[in-house]
Image (cartoon, rainbow, N blue to C red):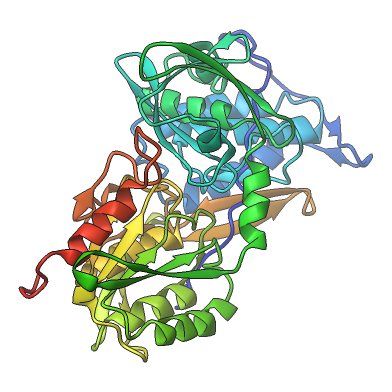
Length: 440
């Protein structure tokens, strides 16, 4: 693969379909008409798609279940689809089992779940059979409505959340794992591409709260209408001036390279710098990422390791390589810099956080978006169906998988705390005000 590694904007697609009997199978499915009047033969189309998936999905055998047995079941399910549109939706539904927001089938329609994490504002976890709000996105409809980390999600509309989370995987999985159920609940909590959400919670004092929330796609659009980089200066204790550079989901925009150069130039006189990547859910590209990191190192430094399992599968030769960051003027002192990440830090944003850690910058983050791998894209049925699939596994230079990275300061929530405050920003200011005379 060329050096240009693309972590493109994610168009992950989600849908919940009507469950059918667990014992159902469809021998010799017929050829079906697609919505444009063309015909598809679902069996060979599925076999072509599965062959690409088996070869290129880098995380195929790393998700904790028997992928071959699961995909055999998927084949019987998708090839019974009455139309091409349903065929695509069932493929997409099958992708949920891998709990990987980078994996999905397009083109999306209004029946799809919102894109996670781009068009989402709630992250849901599962603890002791309760679906817990792990974080609430800053500036979101959910935060403004008063939802806080620690609340318990109980219903989607009138449906118990346990039932709603299970329905995401039916009929393909009999007993979803805790990770899968949490993923299904997060999809359900963030709703579909159109319409409001109707959610019920138990709040911090045990009271039931029922809320109608705007669609999180509205916030996703609003973020893209903002300036790509927001610069703020604050006066902290001890007379210290701290600059905050917050990137608004533009890590795939090459114009950000020069824009970030200018932003750093304008804050070189600050006593400290906070690089806020908590609003970068939609990926980006390595040119932008390396250009940002280059402002914080005075020598070439490795920042991320890549592996290509498809080459080992096809040729029994694994490809592994390390990407480097090169210095880029002006250079801001890494010992006076802190980088922030959270659940809405995805793909290239995650790569920058682990890269900044590798070059010696202090990191503060909750778990991040877990958008797995570098991407490949394929089309089928004369372009009517698309597949986005991670074709590389990615690692910190110390060998940790990117999705397992733990920041220097690991927070349970980075965007909001139980009182609606900003825990990551508060932690960053405290670190910058501490004695930084000793090297890390």
